[in-house]
Every structure is written in structure tokens, then in C-alpha cells.
Amino acid sequence: MKDNQKVIRELRWLVDNQKYFVSASICIKLYILGISRDSYAKVIKLMQEWPRFSGNDEYPVPHPTLNPEEGYLTTRGIGMWSGEYGDNRRALCKWLADRLEEDILK
Image (cartoon, rainbow, N blue to C red; front, top):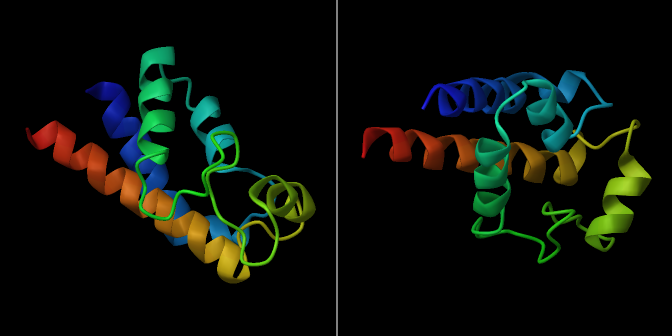
């Protein structure tokens, strides 16, 4: 539960602020939090349930014009949090935070 709260806080921060920082992906930000492997695995599994999931386990966020891997690699460090792709990343963060909050309330 403690990890869930840390993850929720970080995901909400990403939704509100990540457009200003271009170099960190969702997974990197969560890894830096130092959450348990089980908590990290839970978040990764949840990503696959997101209605807009790209279909690629390693690159869950769909890019508007490229396949998921190319979208990530092309925008890494220069714009992964801007435009439609950035909007998709923030939407995933919000969706994950909402699901984790529901889990806490159960």
C-alpha cells in the first residue's frame, strides 16, 4: 500500500508537470522511486490493461504516426512529453493513478 501511494503521487505529478521535463520516461521515473519489484510489476501489468495500450509490452504508449518502439526512441530526450504523444503519456499516468487509487479503496 505504501508503494501504491508513492506511485500514485509520482503519476499525478507526471500528469501535471512532466511536459516541462523531456528526458524521463514513466518507467524510469517509477524505477527511481525505489518501489518494490512486485509494485513495479503491478504497474507494468496495469499498463497492459489501459484502453489505449499500444500492444507492445515494452513501449505501452501509442505514438500517433510511428510504431510504439520508434515513437519512444525518436522522441526520447526531445519531446516524449509534448504533442499528442505526450498527451497519451499523461493519459496513461492518470489512468494508472486512478486504478491504483481504486485498488487502495477496495
